[in-house]
Image (cartoon, rainbow, N blue to C red):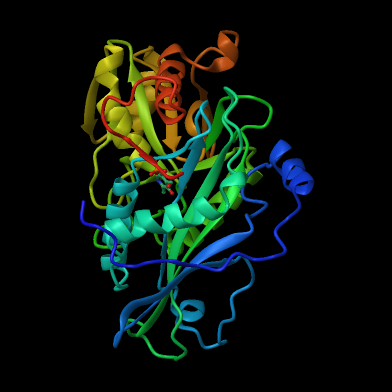
Length: 370
Ligand SMILES: Cc1ncc(COP(=O)(O)O)c(C=O)c1O
């Protein structure tokens, strides 16, 4: 990998949160509620390219009310985690894959590219200064969630790519995604809304995709479900993904099937990692289109034995129920392991073991941050 072009100046704040208060936060961090003492900032302009890269005090950004992002949503982001290993070192998982996706998202949103090396350097810069905010793994699932993002900060009204852009990385300590322990989630099948269409921004990680998913999420919640599953926008027939996670179907013959990438699905780092890991667990993989009828019929016939969702935040999560306007089906047996299927559980464990350094990193997936 080429070396970083940007060097991050470090402005350590004098008023960091006292140790006892930080420890109190880390004892019960929840998800996305509290943030570390510092953040990364860098600026891009058409004249100067990337410059002014620094680690500075976490705090409000000053934006002109005409800043383009507030009007035209020219914004992208990433989500990853820093894991503390038993020897105290801090690592992240496949950051070059997130960096490459960030570059693809930038291209789709007409934002400037940040090199893979600069992206990884920005994570190292933040986590080095805020290292104490990385929770102790302790066999649990605590981590420091890292959120790199980039947005149009130029002040102007008019629809064109901004000439001034801000890059920022913030960190948020995270406990296990499911506070009460792993449990199967219920999914609402959205038939009113779609998330992405061919030629659109579905395979980019841009804020607009999530804004567009919220009305469906409101319906999911109103129908007693945790998350939304979206179908393709053309035929309204092919299962794509959830609002924030990819989907896998476990078949009775030991094959795991995930919807193929069609340009409207976000290519999850967790998804690709599972496709690579599966062989180690004696599973076959298949990437192809999966219709909603195949999901319903497969569960009814017993051909589909487990369904799970995957993503950085919740790792691997069993899906226990699919509901839609006028119907529902239950997946898996809630009397066995609380509804967590054995294939789902072993894939989840394999990923966590690599991420927390509990098994050898044979694929070179980990990058040391501190
Ligand atoms: C729409 C969507 N799909 C899938 C994923 C899973 O991606 P990853 O495994 O890279 O976290 C995410 C989360 O980033 C997402 O927002």
